[in-house]
Amino acid sequence: MSRDVVLSVHDLTKTYTGKKPFVAVDHISFSMHEGEILGLLGPNGAGKTTTIQMLLSTLKPTSGTITYFGKDFYTHRSETLQHVAFASTYIQLPHRLTILENLNVYGMLYNLSPAERKHRIQKFLTFFGVWDQRNKQMSDLSAGQKTRVMLAKAFLAHPRIALLDEPTASLDPDIAHEVRTFVLEQRREYNVSMLFTSHNMDEVTEVCDRVMFLQHGKIVADDTPDNLARSISTATVQLMVGDGMKRTIEYAKKHKLAHTIENRVMNISLDEQHIAELLSGLAKVGVEYTQISINKPSLETYFLYLAKQGRVVKKENT
Ligand SMILES: Nc1ncnc2c1ncn2[C@@H]1O[C@H](COP(=O)(O)OP(=O)(O)O)[C@@H](O)[C@H]1O
Ligand SMILES: [Mg+2]
Image (cartoon, rainbow, N blue to C red; front, side, top):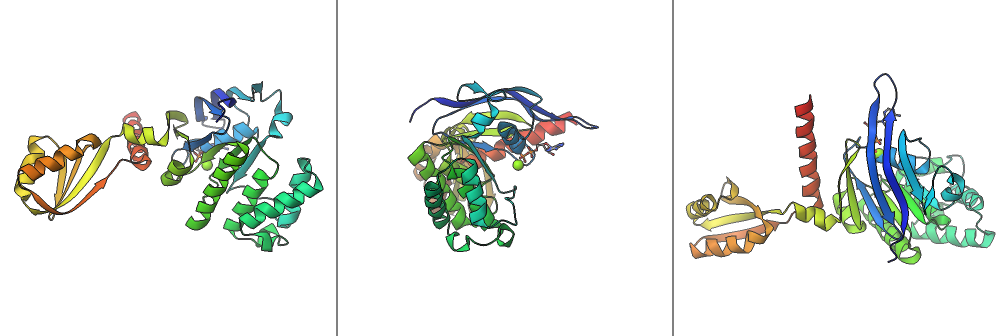
């Protein structure tokens, strides 16, 4: 993969003015490389959509700079936007036009030849299973169908960068899976770079090379999904103890392991790398268990951890 930087954001800030000015995006800086799929995660209100809107210039930053392909966005706005596509579950295409009319207009705006327009529109609509609906007005489509048309539109004109704001939010799980397949295929074929916001941690783990967590408008983490998950190295071992509950508790206390007991099920939290040691230690003192499950830390664990920290910070401030 080429590592050219295609987008670089420096100290970007958005303060919504009004009676009570509100800092929605707070001095964020990051870069995105060619062919990279970068996840932007964060709870509701974290500033994800505000960030994407500034990257599209539909919202004016309060301060900071945005550089695409090495050029300042504000002085090279229209030429840059030729290469930057956008899709969002929350934004509608003109609803009186049919799917075909919408995509044709868009293809013309982006100078696709008639033959290429025809070819790509059919290819994408077929992929998303909405080719048969092509002469229907947008207003007659389900939320999921609208989202798929929006994605077809975003990738129609060979974008170099796609900004996708919760592209799978209104989709059934099997169609959300299709979208992920599509996104990965676009990257493989055309080396498209993408900024992808989502609430779904498993999805982000599957699709994104790197993830940034936004919280109260600030980037609080920026790493690969694996590294983030691993940075919380606590795993949970759940044992259904057949014989030796007392010895299990003694063992946990002796080794200062956090644990809870419910009926005959013991949950032990410990560093992932100490799991093997725990199991052989219990075997040595003759503990027998009838069931075992090990929950490894995931991106979700990390997200919950951050969210919890956020709440603590908030409480202290108010
Ligand atoms: N036009 C606006 N005026 C004032 N506040 C806004 C406006 N749009 C969004 N906000 C606030 O900015 C914060 C970030 O919103 P948003 O970027 O939509 O977050 P996200 O997409 O992460 O859910 C929220 O607290 C939201 O209420
Ligand atoms: Mg949003």
